[in-house]
Image 1 (cartoon, one colour):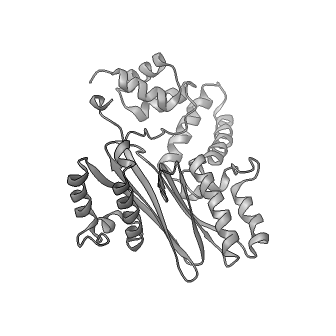
Image 2: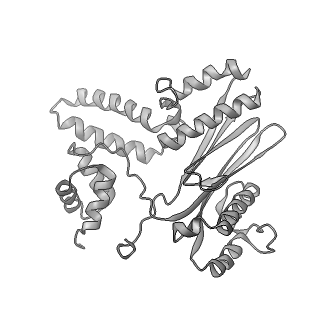
Image 3: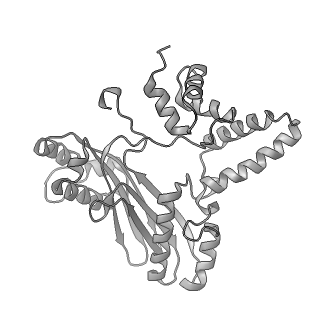
Length: 302
């Protein structure tokens, strides 16, 4: 097994908030596997982290584009990475990223389709144009991710956090709301919910949409924590059920408390909005991209 490096210990500490020695012990116990080490710390009660936060190590921009239709709308997000923040603040790079986002609408947020789409005014694919721009700007760049959603009736609202230029910044969010009600009021509500998503980082829209692997992993950790209390298995099962509900309140958008008023559940916010909008409001879904999420620099880049 490769030795446990200081960089690995630091990464685990950043992800969990646990002490340095505890992090080193966790990595030793789990043969250096980061996800297993996080679970080990949680089982020992040394970390409250529900999931590993992606380490932001890439530069560039996340951009958003929304195209209203006759009754509904389509919204997309793209992440284009660069080596340095300096390039991310370059006008040429910013214009290119906005154009990539606009092009992504026709691809519906599908990354492979977007790469092959014709870049506006270039006569070549998006991938080919970005490769050409690498030579012009003198720094490596790549189209990393794309996401999108469409609403047949209603709005797709957007929000950019840490905006560097119009429609692009550090975090991009799109939220789809289905309703036949007042579109302006619906759009205002959608933007507030998009701001909430940027801050609250939900994993899914609904409990049923959560990745079963994530749920089972959470159950295993909660059960181990409960057993450490010495309670009998029938009590442990009830403890896990209660703590799992708390996990849903933290991880699922409709179960979360609205950050705007800090007291109303998002599901209730949508129910209450029907009166103001003039028709029932349904959450279609959301997409959230954070710049560099899950990308890590090698040791020689630090």
